Image 1 (cartoon, rainbow, N blue to C red):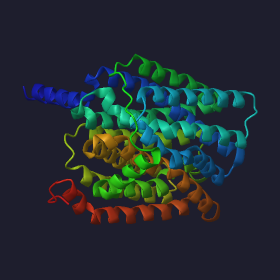
Image 2 (cartoon, helix red, strand yellow):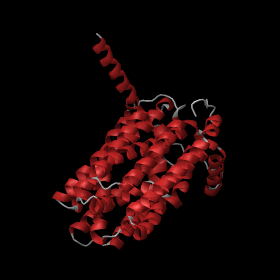
Image 3 (cartoon, rainbow, N blue to C red):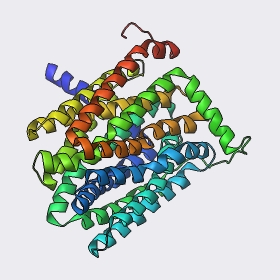
Image 4 (cartoon, rainbow, N blue to C red):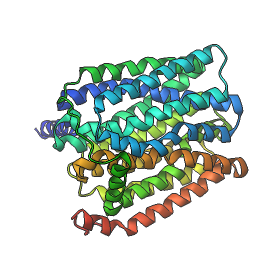
Length: 423
């Protein structure tokens, strides 16, 4: 009897963790996203391997990361304004179509042995323009897609689960595909994977879009959104933490080919395992958030995950053992995605609806727009200091940022009217 009750309780918890899938639109988004993001992570791994194979340079890995994401620093806040004005579904279809075409072009160039670093840079910059618009529109579309505010926090967590399931499986498949067939097939697979999301967006049933007349200019709306975000202390301190993490933490993924080949003395399969370990930890963190109800503990969860990511990255930068590196990358992935998803969840829950797109665009800019600056900065440092020493310094800075956030935690909870007893 006890075993039966335990099993039923387990099923209830599992059902609770996936409650946002009750929405037909979100189910379409979720399953199509699994296919599309799997292709994206396969391509990301193959692109890093291709660049390092062509150049043998950590700097060029950082430069490609910079070129692919720097458009977000400039365009994401403006995209956030338009996410509060334009038809979000239609824009998302455009931001899926453009990367699909680019993936096919990249595949053709590699098949023809005509690929060069300048061509790679052009392709990733154009892709970065699409991504700069995709992210704020995607975040802002979530409530419109689901139609039930009570499901938002679970939908955000499940979206992170989706991303990190793909992060876990995609690189492992990518490593095998590179070893068996080469990078071109990875890019080809990614191109076809976008078709799933395009089909899902067309099949969704949402309320007819009603365009509201703009009362202010784009830059006036942008200024209003920035002032709101800066003056709202929870948003300010959480986005500041995400920004520092993005500059000094997230770029480590672009340098995994160096760790895999030169430090741990492996091949593309090991790169797949390292990237997959990050994804496995991230998937665990995302599922952990999906099983939680309410947001009162979220500020403290952000603090814990920031420390976990920093410590994990520090140990990884000092490791010469493959098994230890895989283990600490798992915990680093857990901390990384828990911090970002928890921040996203809290912002989705507490910000004013009419400023949702703009606030989320600043959040998106904090991890998309500043990561390329970190990639370029850390790539330059790595050329002089070596990759391991560079990330030892970066992890130390992340620890300082986590302490700074800790000192602001009471202020954040007070602004949110949460109890500060668990600070």
